[in-house]
Length: 300
Image (cartoon, rainbow, N blue to C red; front, side, top):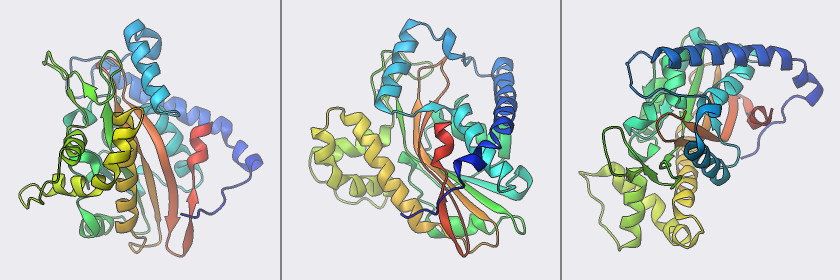
């Protein structure tokens, strides 16, 4: 997709000091909540990277090596909100928020991007996604959501699949609270991959979301299997089909405001660590205006 050019570097730098202050403010709010245990009394505290310990540091290194450019949810949140707030006047009161993330409950753990946006900034969310993170709400779901926008207001959509890492840094596996054995993450994507590589399965009207994942990932499973890291490649390929679906269902016909899309891969890290997020798409568009690529904000 072609994007309009962003502003010159010199113009962007004028806001660098303000961006730092804005990011610091976001970080204080988020870290303050982590230290107080959040609103739900979770027993797992989220620690700064300096306190991860050797095993967790190794897991973090493996995850960031598998997904270059991945950063904590709090970092993604502050970097993404700054240009929207400073350049486009997109505030909480004039913007509605939706997300198309996997329904897996670990995606709402402390430090995960979807929870940060929902609980600490927008305060409410329209769920577009289901298992695997695909936007099963479709055109009707997006249409209903976008017509809830305040007059002259804006729409923000976060989307993407997820992948877990075990305490030893194994991709596609996660040690869940209260369990002794590892489980898959994302379970739906891993199941679709297994189903595709073990033979064909018919569509099941009583399992529509998994059927969709199987159909979309089926043509990609051979390449996934032959890759050097199938679980990482599975997440990357899942992202591609989810992004394609998102772009096919959204529109800017809801009014005069902006539509912002933030896509990437949610990375579930072992408990005690914040969730990471690998940004892969960040754009803004409006009726009668070409999409503008905002990915450069994550390079600062």
